[in-house]
Image 1 (cartoon, rainbow, N blue to C red):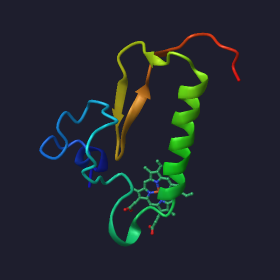
Image 2 (cartoon, helix red, strand yellow):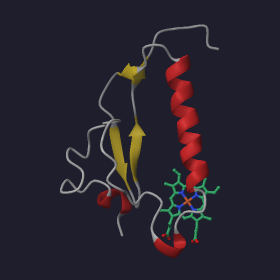
Image 3 (tube, protein in one colour):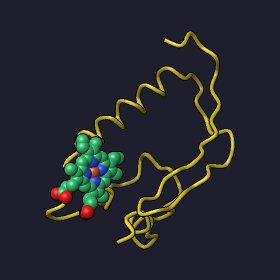
Image 4 (cartoon, helix red, strand yellow):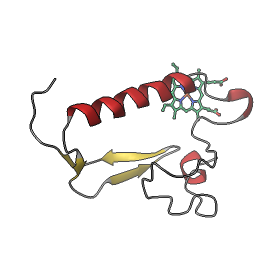
Length: 91
Ligand code: HEM
């Protein structure tokens, strides 16, 4: 199954290419399903939470500075994500 494609089905996820952090959860296939469900799902979600929170805290004014370049293999992801932010103390 193409997990990345399944997660972008517009019949289930309106505007699937739009980052909408307030989106109503509708389930997803990112960690698979059934007996081979990802053993590291909880760790991966915790890591993502820490990374995103830390980036937003440390990089003031973090914003998109160009068009994201997507890649699609079995998973779907971002190959390049140009961003800009204000120079800071780098704590
Ligand atoms: C964002 C990060 C991750 C994603 C998107 C992801 C995704 C997946 C998916 C889709 C599967 C199911 C594959 C299948 O059905 O054959 C899987 C399986 C698995 N994942 Fe992850 N994974 C992630 C992170 C991790 C981490 C951090 C670990 C370990 C520390 C891990 C360990 C495993 C293992 C051991 C399996 C095999 C489970 C089995 O076959 O019973 N994954 N993962």
